[in-house]
Image (cartoon, rainbow, N blue to C red):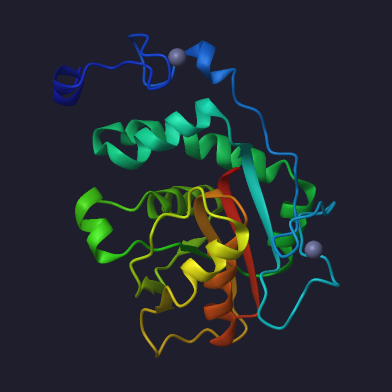
Length: 230
Ligand SMILES: [Zn+2]
Ligand SMILES: [Zn+2]
């Protein structure tokens, strides 16, 4: 028993049952994402990639999500976000994330074709100070270990945006516009391929905006990878 178990006794973050951070019953409440939406038009696409007709010069190339967003996933991600002592949850989350990705034939095909780098969606400094860590960064690092890919923090948040929750698609786009910039202008990004990591994707406006910044800097392909899809 670690000191943390003593200070914060282990209980399921979803139903509070004692014993583990996620009990067996709640574990069965996960469902895998099957929506496979194009992040530009938000309509189904069979291979998780942006429809050829939707693709513009700087748009994102596709997005893969592991879980479909429900109450269980919401509670789990919320705990993962706000309580650093619950980083125990990360193993469960990353296992689910990884297992689902590698079982997707289009994802396997995609990563075998090119060389990829994982890039987490950044937090603002204020938010980072408040929370202590960026969960997208943890997801990226852990997923990187399993996929044997490097993680690099290429972007920084230059605008403190208001929450995207409850906003319309158009509103989300406006809210996130101009939120990201390259961390270092000397990064050599020409022809690189990037897997963008975030916890949840809803309309895709955050991933699209980040992809736009990277593509303007010379990146060839940007594909989003999210733990859940709302
Ligand atoms: Zn439970
Ligand atoms: Zn489309």
